[in-house]
Image 1: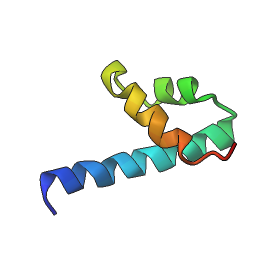
Image 2 (image 1 turned 45 degrees about the vertical axis):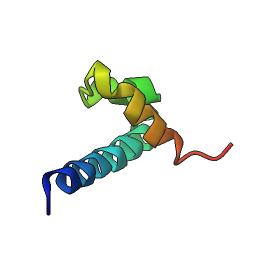
Image 3 (image 1 turned 180 degrees about the horizontal axis):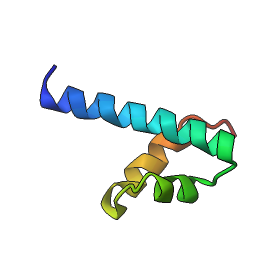
Image 4 (image 1 turned 120 degrees about the vertical axis):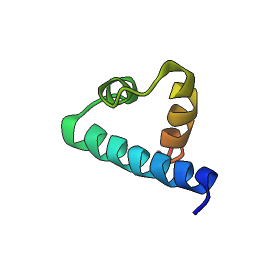
Length: 56
């Protein structure tokens, strides 16, 4: 697995964990990103990925 694929797989695992914690702990996206110590420069990317899992 190359480095880019490894990073993407790691991000996917983190996103799944964040989603699970949001449900279990009743956290908002911001609270979950804080709890997982997601750096500010990555927050927009993570928020967009998380938003894809929600239906309007």
